[in-house]
Length: 475
Image (cartoon, rainbow, N blue to C red; front, top):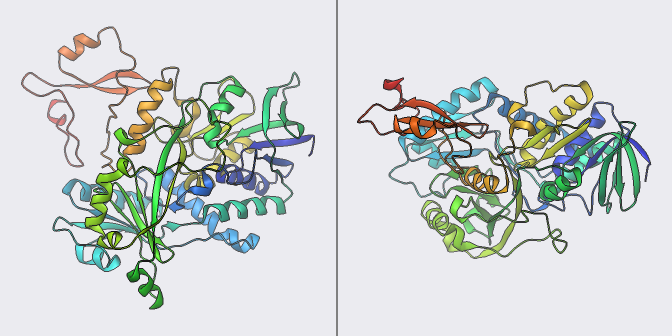
């Protein structure tokens, strides 16, 4: 193993591999990646591989598109198949508010350069003929450039691309300590020896709490258990393939709080557990006995999701279940990554809590590399900067908030929505007096901030909408 490097990347999942690849493509080839076991052995290998471009952020929409563009060129560059299925994604609307959300999103997508089409109920069913049409179906939004990818394959392709340019990867190399030397360089002590480097990037996924202790930090993120099921062969899916028909889009629906997509000759059902049914894993660090492992299924946590899925896609109940995949995935209080410089440290970079590492790893990973190489990212990364949380984001706070954010994946994303869990965290001395005067509160950096005051006779709470807030007459 080499003794010196310009950059050491710790962690061999999709995020770490993306960062190594981007560093090499920026001309920084004196770089290496350290992985405690094998590439993808954490959360990457059991990910469902979805790549949705659906985002209300102009910035994130562009970053996701950048990820897709990167992945689509990998196979030609490296000769490694990545299992990319550009099947599209179909999000159906069964309420007026949901349809308003999709209409709003379609206008945002246009500014992002992302294709998004609003469909009628008839067009929706035509795209997904195995769906049972609900009398409440109002239409859908369709992203034809979405799809899903093979997580292990794309990670191996990224690793191969980085190595072709001169980067090194060391497997079965556990990092035991990271410390700054008097020279300002970093010394990374591993099971295979020591490396002195200019920059360290941590992309340790589920092992983030071990990383935090090693660095003397508190990081507000730890894993949640998530699961999906794969059915046996569905005759209708097999028949479509025999007829040479295209793969149906990934189907998303609020009632099932999840998705259904084709998986070989069957279907994959991926529910997002509601906040009250979510379980944490390894809040204090991954136990020694846990490696590239899975945990027992928990159908009870998603019984409502499953019942709704059977109504929407009846063929799910006509075949057996072939496999359940239930494993940990690291999340933060707002379900966004901690990506950027570690506070109070020089040349120490965090790329942690990528709940959608496959989705964000390419675009966001390349921007982190721009930050390292150029001294600043090419776009503002304030929403993912690790320094956006303060000491108030302790483990109790994080535990409530990451369940709330993860469980709200398929909720309606109202503009200005204020998340209620783990509040109030910090209150000003006049909090009770202002509450008595009708204050309706929001939260900024943990502090409760009055947003508006409800007059006497008006309930002091927000009623969310895409059209008109109940606060508007009083502001």
